[in-house]
Image (tube, rainbow, N blue to C red; front, top):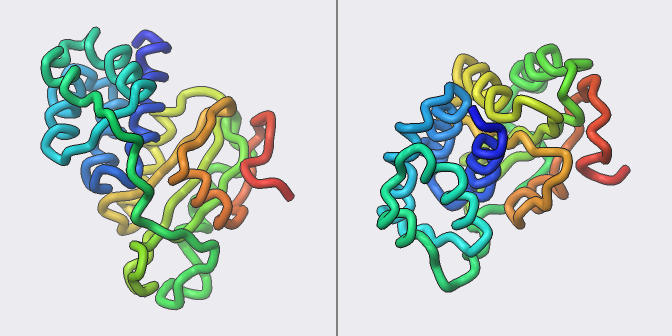
Length: 209
């Protein structure tokens, strides 16, 4: 796959976190990681229209660069360009593990064992997300990882791992080392905890010490 196309698609899906339902975002990322570009090109634009998710100019450019070469409907693609800035995220984040999670967090332990000192992986953090005004019983784990290569495939791998561990719609945010994160990711990072570090020098810490 053309690395520029892959990068455009991956960044677009990062920017859609919190704006599309989790069960759709993880599936789109799984398709990207598996190289199912024609399927992604066919489904993503119509999904954006169905859920009334408007793209800003930069996001629209990513959609065009990533999916038009793989047969995305140009009329659907052009209809996704909105005039308003993306709405504020409807979520809050905390670094505190919910009470309903076991004192020994087996999921975090498996993530640590999988990613610690791994090549191409930088810092690994996690946050717990909940809808604004909702209680902690609905909190959801958000995994935040920096990586230097193979971001879509790493995303797919970690999603499959979390699904095996019981999360049916995992939130895995694999961030490029040079990426200006949207508000969703900035809030998640600001309210996250350190899990482990891979072997790659990601160039910067996700969160300043």
